[in-house]
Length: 279
Ligand code: KIV
Image (cartoon, rainbow, N blue to C red; front, side, top):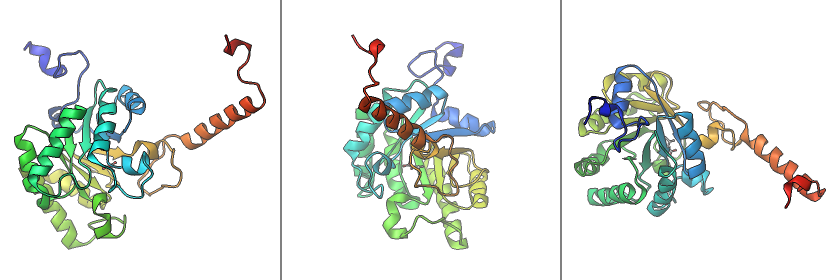
């Protein structure tokens, strides 16, 4: 190891790779962490090129890529397929992959086996799972295999049928107390970071200040250590989904439908291809 090699990628290239320890340093220095979802090679390449810190291969692929109503149907094999495509695209970002519903809740052995498959078959850098104290034993076991784990508290979409709604969580004292305790349990267990989804901003800020690990919010206000959004939502591909927390940075719905509409018109009118577009 040379003096500078600590700043290089774990595999020695000159591109600075984001690791879990880089994320900890960012929190320590008050530098906000950017995180976004991706599920395929082409878009992962773009977000990595743009300089995103963390790519989440979220089980929201179940909604976004497959059109399911919930995240529950996506399988471990499908998550591995998405994750492997993303991994082939990236140079810089840390890639975290969701353990899908049914791949870790059974017992800690199952949780470890699923995590090993994600790391080995997709080449992922870390896994994420939903829940607090109830998944502690699984997290312990995954960590003993040297696999970094991220937690996810607040609105946990894999439990949608228990909640019955996607409304804001932890508004009441009892639930917010429990969430704070769970965040501390996750930290003590050794997760490298926590996603907080759809909880009051004040509570999210208190959690972020109470733990030493990065806390990344979605619908959790600005007092946390970073933000995550679903790529397709922030690009405006899906216009039907517009929760209060979502900021749209593009209107790809109109850009894409207009472009395809123009193409259809050009084909129908025989304008495409022209002389220069043929052999
Ligand atoms: O699956 C996902 O996209 C997520 C984010 C909403 C954090 O878990």
